[in-house]
Structure formats: structure tokens, C-alpha cells
Image 1 (cartoon, rainbow, N blue to C red):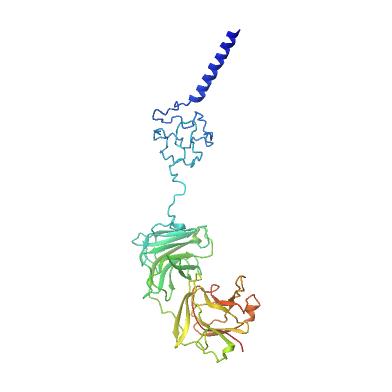
Image 2 (image 1 turned 30 degrees about the vertical axis):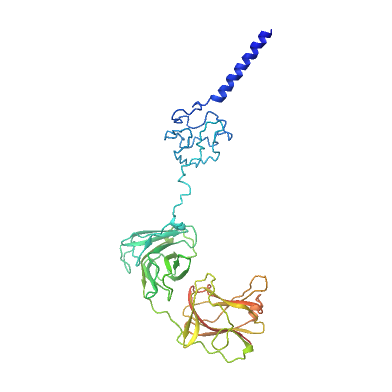
Amino acid sequence: MKHSILITIQSAFVVALAALCVACGDDDDSNLDAGPDTDTDTDTDTDSDTDTDSDTDTDSDTDTDSDIDTDSDTDTDTDTDTDTDTDTDSDTDTDTDSDTDTDTDADSDIDAGTDAGEGDGGTDAGGGDAGSVLTTNSLPIDFEAGPYTFYDFDGGKTVVIDNPSASGGNTSAKVAKHAREGGQTWAGTYMVLEEPLDFTTNNSFKMMVHTPKTELPILFKLESEAGQSVQLTKSTTVANQWEELTYNFGSQTSGIYTKIVIIFNMGVLGDGSASSTYYFDDIRFVVGPAEPEPGTAAPTPPARNAADVLSIFSDAYTNVSGTDFSPNWNQTTQVTTETIGGNPTLKYASFNYQGTELSGTLDASAMEYLHIDLWTPDATVVKVSPVSKVEDNPSSEHLVALTPLTAETWSSHDIALSEFSANGVSLSHIIQLKFDGQAGTTPSTIYLDNIYFYKN
């Protein structure tokens, strides 16, 4: 009886030991990785490989490329899977497949194959140059010799094609075609110039355009690498035929602008149809007409008692000291002081908006009016506001339009200060003045003189 029990125990022990050996050594590759390990097992890891992450690779790890590891996966017993395994499923397998069964298989299955299909890091000229070296173009740009490089953005697409309408004002063989589809209402394109623009002699750009409708706005913008810009918008006068538009930028600083940006039909989303397809050609930098300027000085203000005036800029009165007439508010405006009729006059070129910062807080609560003399060849809307700030409260402003404006004529404006104080401006805490022309022609040019607060 005892002998029989002993035999039974021994048999059970042998069975258990055999099962344990099967569990430990059932790897098809014997877990020794002795051979080249061509992984004909399609890498399904049938060895169950205990893999604390179960290594079942819920994507089956069959990897739609079957992961046969055609590079023979020589598995120099680190199985680093240098096969690049581009795995279109990205199969990054962050499980690291460290194979706790000690099968070393350090392949970690991370697929270091760079997955070129994801995040190619390309320049994608339509959305920015990502720090790459941009291809430049030289003026004039006529699209005949090439190559010409466009950097499209936000739904614009530009190519050089045969002239679809070689007649009238433009019989050249090649032109640029620009189509807008989806993206943004400011979809467009830009080109990079070989050298920054020199405005010493030239001041205007001419460009041939062909559009499907009249009164279609075309924005022409100059940009610098530092983000400075100036832009003009002109509208077409004919449809389905070539015409030349002129953009006169007047006096600009040389050596700044290196990009030309073009946006057709700004504010309207393109749909890819013929009505959203445009053509342009022959971009030339030329001498344009001299920019108009005042022929006489601004009107001379009346004599006033010193106690009745707080002057910001005028030859007629004593100005408050320490004023900064060109603080950096990220504006396009370029501020200079010109001599007009023997009188110092502020000039705002490329005017979109402009600030004036006082050296301290100005108390104008005893005054009644703000006076400004203005001259412009092209501005259609100019607004102004004192800006106040009381302790830690946000600053306050209320823009009031200077009306009427008559082109190339001095106009004098007297604004009751009650218009500002009734709209949140504290007249006893004025720290700045703000001029704004963005509701009208932008940019424009304006001349200013005799800016002062006064009372009668």
C-alpha cells in the first residue's frame, strides 16, 4: 500500500515537472535565439512570452505589413528591429515588449523606423517655412524664365501656367494662376525677394491681374523678416481681361522688406471654382509719382493764456516735455517730423494707428476741448482718443472721428472733452493719445499739427 502511494506521488511529480518544462521552454525559437531568427512566426509571439504587458499586441502585432521583418531580423540577440518597420499603423507599441521571459528580445517593438508618414517636418510652404531656407526671387517677376517659388497659405494654391488670355495688355507666354479653396478668408501666397527693397529711387509696384469680376480687392503687402509690414489694396476695374494695378508705397525705409504677399478678394472664402481663380503677372518695382504733401503750414492757433492750454505738439504754445511720439505698439505707421512752410509738422506714413505717450499723467480736467489740425492725401477715416488710466484699473479710451476730411487740404478739429469723459475716459488721468485709421483706407498718410487741450 505504501509502495503504491509512493509510485502515485512520483508520477504526479513527473507530470508536474514536465508541464513546467513545457511552460518554460515552449518558445518556437527555443528561446535561445541561436539562429538568424527570421521570425517566420510573423512575430505573433506564440511563445506567449509572458510579456507582462501580455505582448498580445492588441493590434495583433501582425502589423499590416505582416511584420515579417524582411530584413531577416537577424536578432543579434537584441532583436533591435532595425528593419525600420515603418508600420503604417504607426505601431509605436509603447509596451516596449521588454519580454520579461528573459528572451532578451530587446527589440522593444518601438519601431524606430521613424514612421515617415507622420509629422514629416517638411516646410509645407503653405503654412510657414518651419525655419528652412526660403527660395528667393529677383525683380522684376515675369514668370518666363523661372524657376519661381510661391509660399501659399490658408487655402491658396499658386502655379505658373501658359497665359490663358494672351491678348490686350498682356501677351506674355507664362503667368501665375492663383486659386483659393477653403482654408481662411485671407488665403493667399507670398514670394521671397533676393534682397531687401531699396526705396531710394523706386516707391511703387505695378502688377498685371486678370480676375472674373470688377471691384475685386487685391491686397499687396510688403513684409520684413522681423514682422514689420505695410500694405495697400486696389480694386479691379474690368472683368475677364488683363489690367495693370499700381501700388504706390510712398516713402518707406530701405533695407527692411523682403517678402511680397498677395491676397485676392480678402474677406471672402474661396470655393475653388472659376470665381475664386485669378491670374497675375509682371510684378515690377518702379518709380511712381511723388507722394503729395502739404504746400503750406497748418493754420496758426490763436494766442491764449498759458493757463488755458495744455499743448502736446505745437509751435504756438509751450509743449509738455518728455513726450514719445512713436512708441512701439506694433503699428505699421512710421512717424517723422517734417518742416512744412517753415513749421515742424508730424507725418504719419503707412498709417494704420499710432500712439503718443506722455512722460507722466496729464490732468486736463479743467480744459474743454481737444484741438487737432490734419492734412491727408488719401485717408478716409481718422479717429482720436485720449487714453486714461486710474491706478490699477484698465486704461480707458473712446475714439471720435475727425470729420470732415478733405483730401490735400488742412482741416481743423475741435472736439468737446465731454465726448470722452461721458464714455469712461478720466480727463484727470491722461497718459496717452491714440490715432486710428483702420476703419478707412489703410495704410494712408496723414500730417498733424497743433495738438493741444484748451478752454475758452
